[in-house]
Length: 304
Image (cartoon, rainbow, N blue to C red; front, side):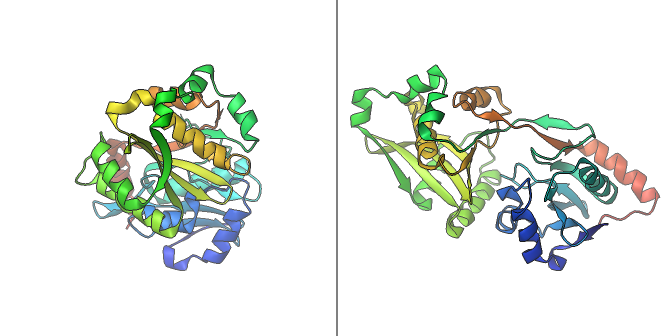
């Protein structure tokens, strides 16, 4: 039996136990992650006595709850002791019948019969650093061999949030700085204060020219941001930083590249020779949402 629970009804001890013992465990489904990234209290679907759970974040628009994955939240879906395609399909059916869905991602271990769009993600699994490095592409290895002159004037440092914020704001392109960027910075600051987020910077001639933001939780390290001064891209600082974090963590942790949809980003990530781990996502256009809303209103269905 699948039930829908609002935030205040959730037994978070049982929720955490289910998530931690699940075959599909993802840091992005944890309470701390969703409390930080969601702009509203999220809900869950739960099977029996927390034998399986499905977190459901949403936004409120037009007076309705509309399911939408939060910023920086790549994968959610069903979490259970052993992945079960029939159970996953039952959760999907319940979700589609009871919510308006703009975008909802499942995870890379959820088996589903239903057709949906597939997105790409890349993972490096724990191994010795020497074996992982040996698998890098020849091009990536060349990028990591910095000139002696560059090596003498460069260093890698962990930096605090305030320094990271200044660099991100000065070198971010493609975001609405009045809204999107401020929301990303709110999330980054919260994760940093909670101890999950680390900022690692590549300095050249005493100046930050590249920086990455990595989220650590248990045996997972995820790349949540890669920021670069466009005047120094030829120095390959981004490659050096990612390799540095991989070297520090790969013996005990999975390294999650958190994406790979854009061709240039996919090519960059593939240079580290990670494993492709695709996942499914339900998406509906605004037009289709309004069509569904009209149909359901005729049937007296409410999504408040």
